[in-house]
Amino acid sequence: MRKRMEISLLVFLLILPLLLTSALVSISKTGATGNGQRHVTLEENAPSWPMPENYTTEDYLNTTNPYSQISPQGEETDCEGSNPLYVLVFGDEEERSAVRALEGSPPRPYGWISWATMQLERGDESLTANFGIDIRILDFLEWDSDDSIEYMSDDFEYDLCDELLAEKGHYLDQWYAGEHWSNYVDCIIGITSQATPETASTWGVAPSHNELDQGKIFVLLKWMTYWKDDNLAQHEISHLFYADDHRSDVNCCVMASTHTHFQTIIWEGYFWFVFAYVPCDLTAYSWCPICYYRIESNRTRYLQTLTISATSGGETYPEPGTYKYNYGESVSVLAIASAGYSFVYWLLDGYPVYDRWIHVTMNSDHDIRAFFRRDNSGGGGGTPGMPTSILP
Figure 1 (cartoon, rainbow, N blue to C red):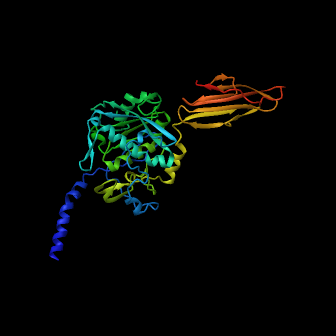
Figure 2: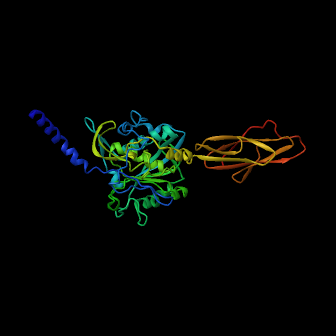
Figure 3: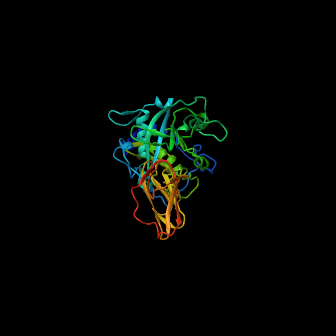
């Protein structure tokens, strides 16, 4: 009996440092916002909510990403989803000097670019599997943040988000030729390791709905640790598709930040000793029905749109409607006059094009309308000639 007590005491002494260290573990929590407020983290010690009905203990404790690749390295060159999000990644001077390591023998060091690549590619695996949303990194660039700024984001003070937009926002919607991808920039991602004492518990910021509508597409990240960082990226990128934070919602998902449950050990490639309350958004890889619908409804918002319409007296192929295409894709459009009508011209972004069969290169959003007129020739629906390639 005494020997058992001694063994128990020894085990307790071995884990005591872990228990004490756990008090220093900082948990990221994001708060609900309105259309005019950015999505930012909340203070620590948010209330813990009961286990939601749609989430079992087994689901919560199984923190392994079900869509995880064996190694995310190399995924940055793969076409993984049909809804690409082209991003430029900026590291501030503190982040560029950071070196991180994973457990191993010996530990493998990661510079800021390799760590960001790994976490962003890990962060889009569930987005790709569910919505086809594929983060495609155009390049990694430098950003010298103002060291006097003490806020990640604040409604009344000049903050790092404001500076990121002021310094690097001019890249948005501009063409960028990168090493692996070339496209228009959909989003700028800032990564900072700068101390922000006024918002010390803030780990990620995403735009408000109003900013999204204004084209201010950005994400600001401050890495925490390996098993949290892919979830942080996944969470903030979800905001770019109008998914909102949960505060007291009954559903647990990628966006749920105040459903916290005490966890001792997390397995995500390694055993991580946690001994802390962890919110769902740092371990979940699925979305509740409301958030899923929001992202599903907006998953194509960063593609190029082609809007086709026609006057009476004919039809088009594809038929009139709004279509989404990848940047640079070539789309064939045909105008077919009805009996008793003739094709006159297309009006493409305000410019007339007189060939009935044309190719439109999707280098931006385009609007095209077919015009027909009544005549006595018996129709204009014959076989068209060779198509005209149009690059406005």
